[in-house]
Image 1 (cartoon, rainbow over the protein chains, first blue to last red):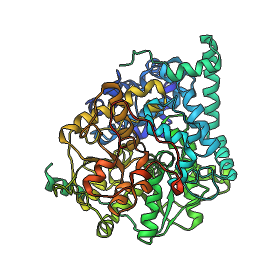
Image 2 (tube, each protein chain N blue to C red):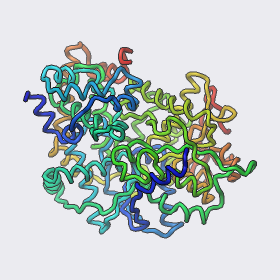
Image 3 (cartoon, chains in turn yellow, purple):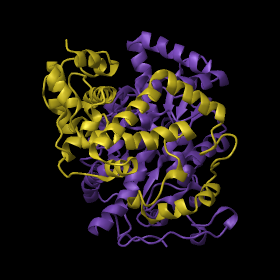
Image 4 (cartoon, rainbow over the protein chains, first blue to last red):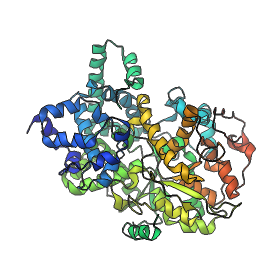
Length: 229
Length: 357
């Protein structure tokens, strides 16, 4: 088959996620993303199942593969035991590997996710670290969370946490030797390479758009064209 | 709900859950937002029931949020998880308890994938050895922490000081239970009760005296959606899905919500505030919202633990109206104090949603 389809079908998530779709549309009916966005997982599965190389490339550059919330509600209900959510994960991986993700507004957001969740995992050992969260970026979280953030050490001490402390416990400082092991795993198994690809493709797109790195970050984190639903 | 029919379905989805000797792995999200819940889990299991729950400072994030935001490749996440299994093996345990649903779903997915692709498991073993020098045995049992509380629910009820009953009317409290998508939607047989009618929280509610509310969007996602909340531009997806759930449950007048997942209580709690700010619409009684709890918080309430030790003060929707209904005492003046009654600020007030005090 074509180059992209061959890469897709080498992904075990694709092989586990798509056996034979009968286009019943049950996945779309149950999908929270389909209710909110202009999104139809049945159509996506149809495109990849047809193995049309040009349409797969269009898909990898599109907004639509980034609409899924990966809740996997589709997996429970598919009468043929397919997993459209896993097909989406495989498509998103390929879009990043090929550098296509910067062609869509939603795909460009991968840089923001890499620079927050991705870097926090490596730096702290947690995918979320409270000293880097801010009320300005999360005004929806409400005044109690704002109070908590402003009194982080006192609140965690009161609730039995071990924020940045030694030994086990809640939000302890994860020992450096464990973080070193995590880094070596990332280097060996493809995460570091993916991070570098995200940075490189994003830098190229920022230059193409005439934006400095910080301007590009602010844009991709906040911008919503309003043309997604 | 046709109860007898559900009981027949539940019989097909029973899960073997050891009641002791666990290697415990914490949740990134819960440590950040509901620290009191993990403290309460260990307090109940170790201090109340005398169980052995082992933890180590050397475990890390499973990288699951990175995996489900698609920035961390599958092989990386599998190797990180293999490292957690190695820590369990080295500590001499074979029962693995995850505090996080995203992690629990990933462990189930990884173990299942390795069954279908044994060559992938061998590759991950090689990766782990090369990167860390470690080796692992696969866990004999993987439990979500709620499975374990479910297992001991009747012991908690027997020791409990309170029940999920309205002390003014004598009637059971009406409880919405929210399971979290990755608990059983991918692998129904890995969750107590399956995916369509999960019983893990319903069993706790029944054991503790409450009545489970069945409503149309009971199984709908809380709206997290990983990248759909984590990137600011996408948060409309998140709040729209939560809004859908509240619109669906509101006519059934629930007294409270009990949750299973790290993110779900955060979104079901916080988005009530945001919906009120956006639309001046508050769910629940008298403008206070519907209080949302983790299963450990509810277990702690039943056992009579101090609500402020459980961490109920870090909820946006005030817990006091529910505590008053059950008759659980609390000290209003101690709510926002630090350790040893240390004075710290108090939170501001929302524009529309009422809070205590």
